[in-house]
Image 1: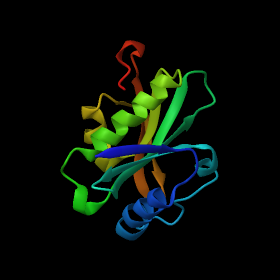
Image 2: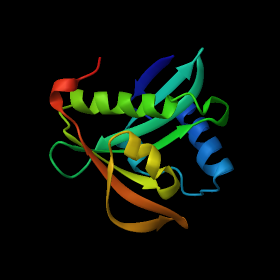
Image 3: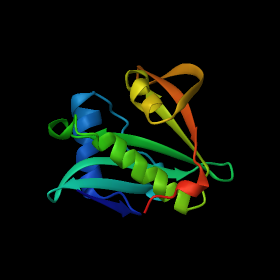
Image 4: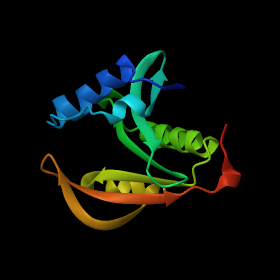
Length: 145
């Protein structure tokens, strides 16, 4: 397993997001302006792209937003979502971030709660799919290298 951080939207991240979000889940507005400024992580298994996510600084000091977390179907059930999220949190800590926000699909809420995220606010909809905002404080003394 290898995780690479890209500062541009890498073709492997595009492929994973198209497969998971557009083909499997039916989203249409998958790519946006944020992709130009976000950091993109891609997790590889035996050199093949298996999972991805992105993160970017929010408008508040020390606060980052993680999103577009996706694992290709054939790699699910192996804790790769947890691993790529943990890697993003580590990168955020290195950048001086102390808080992470994410806009989770309601069906994925239990996954994020297991990772230490707490829901806040009201449910909303993204392309008809129910979502909830979640947050997590990152202790600065636990930087993972």
